[in-house]
Amino acid sequence: MKLNKLTYIVAGLCLSLTSCDKFLDKPPLTTEQDETAWTTEDNVRLYANKFLPTFFVGYNVGTTATGAALTGFRFSDDVLALGNQENFTRSVPNSSIWDYTSIRSLNIMIDRIESRMGGVLSTEAKAHWLGIARFYRGWRYSQVVASFGDIPYYNQVLSDTDFDALFKPRTPRNEVMDAVYEDLKFALENVRLADGEQNVNRYIVAGIISRVALHEATWQKYYYNNGDQAKKFLELAVTAGDMVINSGRYDIVTEYRTLFSSEDLKGNKDCLLYRIYNEAGGVQHAVATNSNLRESTNNGPTTDLMKAFICNDGKVWQNSAVENSTAFDLDNMIKTRDPRFEATFHRKPLPANRASLVYIAKFLPRDVEAIHENLNSAPVTAFTANRNTTDYPVLRYAEVLLNWIEAKAELATMGGAAVSQADLDKSVNKIRLRPIAAEAVARGVKQTAALQLGSLPSDPERDITVSPLLWEIRRERRMEFTFEFSRIADLERWGKLEYMDTKLNPDLLSGGWVNFQAQLPNLINADLGVVSTTGTYVQYNGSNAAAMRGFFRHKSNNDRLPFVGQVNINPYLTPVGRNQMDEYVAKGYVLKQTEGWPQN
Image (cartoon, rainbow, N blue to C red; front, side):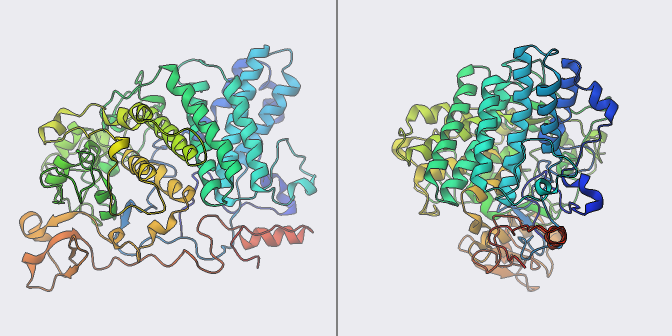
C-alpha cells in the first residue's frame, strides 16, 4: 500500500449521523476554553502555536516517523527497499477520506478574531493573526487538494446539524486553490515582518508560499495543462521568493551535514525556521538513531540516486573530465561528486544497510560517525533509541532559492523573462559555494563548479521532455533534499511518477557499488547479486566470487507492480474509501469518487 502522499492526511473519517462532530474533527475546546481563548493577544498566540508541530514536523517526536525526514519519506525513486518495492495504491480502499481537523480549528480562529476581538486587538494585531490563520488554512487546503483533487471547501465554522454543508459535493480544485491563493496573498501582506524568536513571521510565510505556489503551478502546467493557473501561481512563487531573498536576512553559510546534525540552530542564517529538540524539555526524536551506523535497515539509496549526483566539474559522470568519474566505489564517488554526496552517505559499504549497503549518514554528527564506525566502541547514548536532540531546519533558505529559480525557469517557458546567469548565481551557484567540512576536504571532496547557462551539462539520461536548464534545476533539488520531504512531491507535480517504474528503470532495484571479495567477503552468499555499469545482472553461483563487483542487488528485490496507464488507477490522486461513499448515500447524499478511480 502506498504511503500517504501528504503527512497530515488521516484516513477513516467517520460520517455516521451519530458522530457528525467527527466529520470536521472539532478541536478539544470546552465552552469555557472557547470563551477565554479570545480575550487577549497572548491567548491567540497560544492557540496559534498549537499548529507549529502540525505544520513544521521536523524530526517529529519520539519514535513517530510520520512526516519525519528519512524515516517518513521512504517512497520515491531515491529509496530502495530490500525485497518487494512498495507499491502505489491499486484499488479503492474500504476507508479513506480527507482530514479537516486543522481547517476547522483555523476557521474557528478566524471567526473568533473577527467576531469577538474587535475591542481587544489593535488593527495591526488583528491583521497579523488573521494572516497567520489564513496562512495555515491555505497551506492545509493545498495539502488536501494535492492528495484528493476536488474537495469540499469551507471557509466558515459549520453547525453540527447542517447536513447539506457537512455532506456537500466536492468543490472543483481550481475554485479551492483560488481561495488558497487569496489566503496566501493576505498572509503575505499582513503577517508581521518580525514577531519574536521562533514565531511565524512574513519571511517564513513567504518561504512556505514559494513551496506551495510552485507545487500548484507545476501541477497545473503538467497535469492539467492549465497555463493560466500555472502562470498565476508561478508569479506568486517568484514574488514570495523575492521577498525572502531581498530581505538580506538569510544566507548559505553552513556545511551541509551540520544543518541536519546540529544541537543548536539558533541564529543560523541558513534557516528561516527550525525545530528545537532537547532532553530537558522532553522533546526528542529517533531519526539520528536511524542514521547511527549501528541500526540495521532494509531501506537505502538506489543506484539511480547515486548516479544522479553531479561531478565536481559540473558535468555528469558519463562525460566528466574528473579523474575516475566513471568509478562508482564510494572512495571515488566521494572525491569526484558534489560535496553533498560525501555529506549524505557513510564512506564505506556497511552490511547494516541491508538494501543498498550504502548507509545514510546525513543526519548523524560527524564526530559521532567517527565513534560509531568502530564497531568495538560503545554507542553514544544520545544517538540511540529516541534520545536524539539534534535540531531540524524545517524551512531552509536553500529551498526558497531552488523554489524561486525553478519558478523563474518555468515562467520563462510561458513568455516570462529568460533566466539569467545572475539568477543562477543567486540560487544554484550560491548553494554550491557553501562551506565544506574539514573531514570532507581530507577525503578529497571539492566544491562543485558553477552551473553556467552557456555550458549546461549534456546528460545522455535527460528526459527529452524536460529542457536542459530545468533538468539541472531538478537535479539540484534531488541532491539538496535527499531523504527529506521533497522527492515524491516533486515527481507528482512534474507528472513524472513513471520515474518510479522499475521496469523502465532497473537502477531502482540496486544499491551501492561494492567489491565483495575486497570489502565484504563474509557477506558473499547465495542471495547476492551485482549489476554492472551496462546493466548486466550477475548472480552469485558458489564459484564466481571474483565477479561480485558492481551495484549490489539482492536476489529478493522485485519490481514494483504496474501503476501508470492502468484502468481505474490514478497514482497521482488518492481515492475515497467505499465506506465513506456508502455513508453519504445512507444520508441521502452522493460523494463523487476521486478523478481516475471507479465510482463503484
